[in-house]
Image 1 (spheres, rainbow, N blue to C red):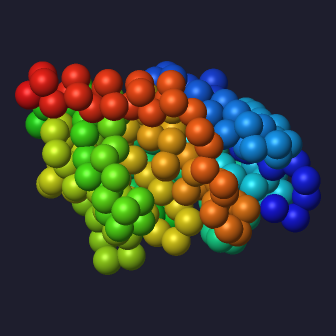
Image 2 (cartoon, rainbow, N blue to C red):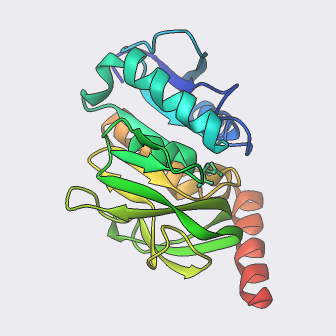
Length: 235
Ligand code: GLN
């Protein structure tokens, strides 16, 4: 964090805001402010170039059409995207961060190529609670969220899964999400960073360049335990 204010880029919220993932920006902002750090959410709309100066970039979920629009826009207007930025994408966001994706209409679209992931339409829509065990990146902590997608994603050699599925569908082959360098994609809505504070703090530690002091938020911990317990019961 070269500057004292952390700038959180919220990419195309009017297009990739369908599933409430814009809340991830609020969560990151809050977790920084609770630690006495200044943060600002910078929405970047359709038709605007994506500034290269932001500390972190967020992409949310959206319908197939919205997703194709977002990919075309970002390929053209996010020139600095490959310069080691911290990026977090959810569902359509994950698919757009990949190399290519194809929806129900069979048309293939180029993604941004920040994750080594390709996506095809699956046979049925996954709409359910999604629980995964994270990779070592998050010390095998449980991840929880809600999924709502048709896409089935395949990882290539340059991406690692974010976790392995305990309940639900995730990528469709038992893995969940993808990670390459400081770019993370996931199928977890919720918003994901509200339901998984460790994931929020991992992104923030990458921005800061060091781990951040832990936050003592008993109500957040309690809610997380409640949700994980409820999901276990519903199995
Ligand atoms: N349109 C994509 C799919 O159905 C992404 C959906 C979403 O972002 N929730 O796979």
